[in-house]
Length: 567
Image 1 (cartoon, rainbow, N blue to C red):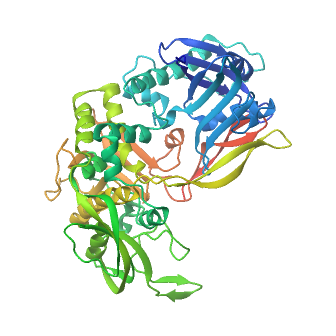
Image 2 (tube, helix red, strand yellow; image 1 turned 120 degrees about the horizontal axis):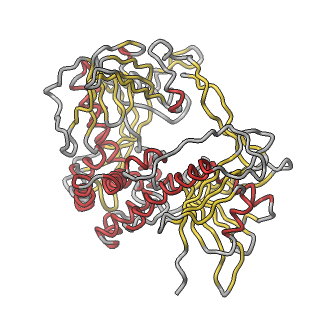
Image 3 (spheres, rainbow, N blue to C red; image 1 turned 180 degrees about the horizontal axis):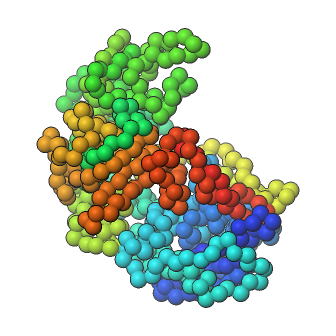
């Protein structure tokens, strides 16, 4: 029997000047024991420790640390290929730059490879290290050091520096141990969730309920796949609102999966308009139309294909301005019947032409057993298990819509010793069941948008599963409950706020002791930058220092201080 591979959590601390880019501290903590297995002051000794072993190492942000690993490998004549020969390595890096794994082959002894597989623990635990410590109720805490201090080659780590890097590794190692001990051993949360779901319902049921569809059918389904609803009422843009309430849905996506009619099985193609069919009550329709938003209604439609419209804008009409002239051509849409009914309720439609579509069988309860299992854990535990349950509840639906088209980045090193990337050829794998993702996200949008419409006169902002309303009274029309699945939970009452655009706003809450806690939400703005935000300087065009931008140099990456500008 092959010996089980040792599993570690690793971390690098790196220099901060472009003139000298290197690892000045490296560490490995054993996931099983939480003991420090290695600590050094360079990357060379780190690899010396690993090269005669068969190991798995998790880095919490492999995209950053992986650049130093790739630089080391390429400068030391390791070849990137899939031969699995000594001094070769393989990578799984997407065309969008997501790092999933780096596998390094050192040598082969007694028919067994000496190798190390680097994974990204952030894809298992998508939180900052400091948040993991608190959420999992661990004794170890995130510490602080002076990141900018100069550390020459051969720098002997201080006790504070040793404790800092060890604590970072120990925190992630303890959380991963809990996760892995529950059988959640896949590369990502979504893969863990899908695997766990298959185990609950059986592989044969999964294959029967969710058949692999041909790529051309999957392509049609994918055109109806959209994300969450995020929208700022123009009435409140750049306006101070001194008093309001916020609500969040209790587990929006799991509630949809639990309660709604969802598709299963092989679809049937139809021409023209869908004809009601009791056996196939769900459908995706392909149509063209002109449209205009009804008075006092929230827009629901974004069109992300082509250059005619701004992809992030919710449209009030199909009319666009191109080269100074109006374009009133009909638009082409692919919609689930859930989205289509919402469209008809919020817009006046003109010149509708139904082209074709796909219809599906529908059923309730496909995910009941899975959600009951993890929902019970979430409701009856605290700390680590509750966090794992939340991850498993929220990670499953997206896996169904995984894009079958993949394209990898291949690392290489340029003439100046800097890691660069080239794109590999496109590849295709079997889709999972994209239409499930289409309907789950459609029902979720429907819930949020219809709830916002019901309080239209007070509606400020919505983001996927949240509502922000003017005025502090609790609306009777919303289904409100602190814990019930799918109900709106009263999250807070704010005394001041300012909304600039989607995902860019701030709200102030009065605490019990009378002090004010102001929460800044701004996509892409680092937490340290948020500390300098005030109501006076929070507006489009404002710039703040403190955002760290990664830049590649020989040896790895340096995080360079740059301005963050609100756009």
